[in-house]
Length: 283
Ligand SMILES: C[S@@+](CC[C@H](N)C(=O)[O-])C[C@H]1O[C@@H](n2cnc3c(N)ncnc32)[C@H](O)[C@@H]1O
Image (cartoon, rainbow, N blue to C red; front, side):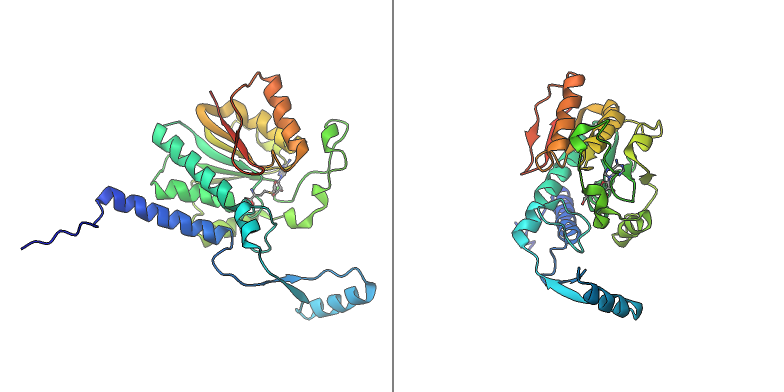
């Protein structure tokens, strides 16, 4: 007598379930939420004597650290700058990125995926993972960054960036070798990942980049957001997604988006992802 297990999944549902398990686990890894532990963070004392002691210890491959506990709510919302995680964008924006990629695949919107402003690479790694999970072999993930932090502000050309301190933040300088090795850690460094090294003004208008289906902007400043829109928006397919990470968090970024939309007569509705991220679908 045969026994049918009513809980047994159809092959299609089983694949969907495995995709979700993989991508959910990946999001926990990329945001460093798997292990709840206080993180050792090297201290940088201002006091001269303490600096000398730290320097002497560093010469002996030792460092003085403080233990920083992770606020899990802030991490999920992408509001902290993680010491170890590979992305700082949090779960809501990762979930939304997954939705956009799945949607362009399902609707057959042509084009590659690009992130302009990748830091340690986490959101771009996730883009590659979604393509992998859906066995998509004819789309690329473009990974664009200076890999040396943000440009100094140019207030003559971009008054909204006057006094912007981002270029002084060393934590935002992540060399390309580290980003590549982060891709490799997830076994996602392959020939479907293309790196564009340099300032957005020099790289993003390149003819090397063809049609795009999902464009993710995460360059914080007015200049970076404007250069990315100028270079990439004309390549975005109708029906594709334009995502802006810093619209809520950085007024200069929001200004660049509004100026670009006004100059090009774009009236597609801007939709909120979370406290800072927004997107629209190109009509
Ligand atoms: C906030 S971080 C990006 C965070 C990242 N998307 C994540 O998933 O955590 C901003 C990044 O943009 C890059 N960037 C900003 N403006 C740039 C520009 N004009 N040209 C090249 N890279 C730029 C910086 O080097 C930095 O890696």
